[in-house]
Image (cartoon, rainbow over all chains, first blue to last red; front, side, top):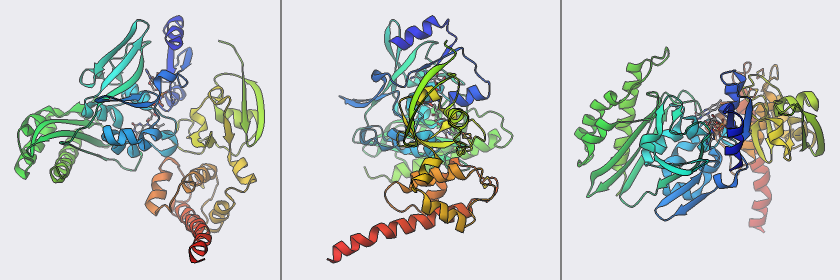
Length: 273
Length: 170
Ligand SMILES: Cc1cc2nc3c(=O)[nH]c(=O)nc-3n(C[C@H](O)[C@H](O)[C@H](O)COP(=O)(O)OP(=O)(O)OC[C@H]3O[C@@H](n4cnc5c(N)ncnc54)[C@H](O)[C@@H]3O)c2cc1C
Ligand code: FES
Ligand code: FES
């Protein structure tokens, strides 16, 4: 790909620009000052949404407004559709891309956490070829992912939701479109009304999107009654690692996360099988 | 990297072509090169919404787009919308309801309102507030802006509904 070569010949002092909705503010604030910007917005192989057997392939350049409206995403990867109205404001959704959001990996962003909840795989290209990284291994640290300098995120591959799957998304934010104080997406598979598998992904409560693993462990094999939900809520705070914040201290974030988890599990419990 | 690049685009119906620095944003290009100063720049980082323009049919922040990226596109600014009377009713309603004081935010407010009212259906006050979440106003307290947009939404809907009713009746 021409873009990969351009990065190589820049002496690595370059940034890819997709929608520019995170990068340009960072340039304006002088947080980044690359010599060269490589516009990837016209690369055809990074576009499109396509069903490939049991996987939905979402091109990295799919814009937030397209995620919001896409019928394939609504059917097969619905957590992205549920989250999309909460991602920024309408004009930002008209340019920002899902690949840019996931590559940027802001811990308060919706799509990275939904990628984790959906158990998606990320297709990454470099000059030697492409590889796929599971969401669980992709988000490494604050704004840091498995994408190495010069590599491109090509597409997100989502295992499609099946009968028996239930899901729920919600976030607490001061105003619609603001980054969330706390948010969460859950995908659960039920067998005979008991939880067979579950992925609970929180955002804005640590340096990466985080799975509430202790809560997940408690829920496996159980029916979602009030006592089980309360037991999951009791341990959920331990999985999270919110940073100091003068407006929303860690104790408050943990509290909000427990409230959110209770609401979402209650919602899932009530969903008809 | 070359010092200047050529950009060509259609702005408010007119083809324009200029050699500019690649680092110029679309906002700079519109305001400084084309002297279309209706597009305002407040924060220049995507937060205040004063710089919104229509790019190939979608409202975007001109402060977050480089002019070179918009080369080959069709742009409409607040000047274009008002000259072809596409937002005359919104302008009238903003005036009537005192939905502007200093007017700095108004071009962006009009862009968002124009985009919202171009979609089907009649938005609720909550829908209007959600749509305006990326537009800052430091003067009015927003209530009057929501009033003005709501008024136009209803009027446009009633205007569009009337002929349909006649058809049904006929
Ligand atoms: C006022 C404001 C409010 C916002 N609110 C929210 C919000 O509530 N929730 C939210 O999630 N986001 C929010 N955002 C961010 C927005 O969603 C961005 O669109 C998104 O984070 C980045 O996508 P982009 O396509 O614009 O990426 P860019 O800004 O173009 O790029 C971001 C970074 O990712 C890299 N990159 C981009 N694409 C690729 C790729 N395919 N492969 C490798 N690297 C790549 C770039 O090099 C850059 O480092 C907000 C932004 C603003 C300005
Ligand atoms: S100037 Fe573009 S959003 Fe403030
Ligand atoms: S009227 Fe002054 S900022 Fe809105």
